[in-house]
Amino acid sequence: MPDVKWTMKAREFVSCNCAYGCPCQFNALPTHGFCQAVAGMEIETGHHGDTRLDGLRFVGIFRWPGAIHEGKGEAAVIIDERATEAQRNALLRIFGGLDTEPGATMFEVFSTTLEKFHDPIFAPIDFTVDVDARTGRLHVNGITDGHGEPIKNPVTGARHRARIDLPRGFEYAIAEIGRGWTKATGPIKFEVADTHSHFANLHLTQSGVVH
Image 1 (cartoon, rainbow, N blue to C red):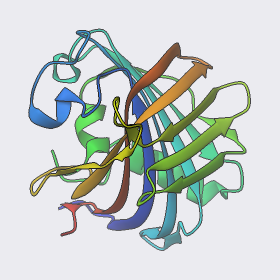
Image 2: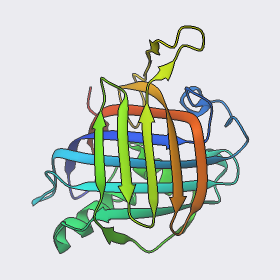
Image 3: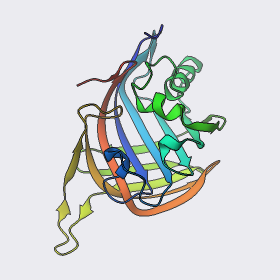
Image 4: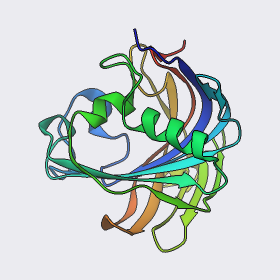
């Protein structure tokens, strides 16, 4: 067991380059053979040891040349500028997969697939997400800008609702699926349009997803 225990209840909005639904969630290869993604999170309540994390936001930007499990990836993390030194260190340890049981969370799993971890950025993060409505907005000046919305029926234009339920997942229990547009212009650069997005309520600890 990790020496330091942590937990967080958070909301997330993720946008990646794959088709709606994201093959990764089904142990399939990425739609175009590689993965690019931006994930924004806002912690409702949380702690890392004695350090409270309530209300803080952070963003992860990722790129892998092939499937995630094949490695050789890179990541950049943006931490809420409001975070104290202790909070910054705590979030960087969580995001880096430290103080976490092997395979327990996406942070720890992804950390094993990365060759390059860019220097952390501390900046204002403009972030809103409504999980049930399947809408999200994420903006970090000069680094990333994106939004998500519901999938629309191509015939009627009606909002389509689909969810992914992962009883043994390492990120969420249930995610609402939508579509998104994201542009990354910081240390990792790419742009996606009308591709997969998901919106989820997270409850994570050093031991994984709490069900």
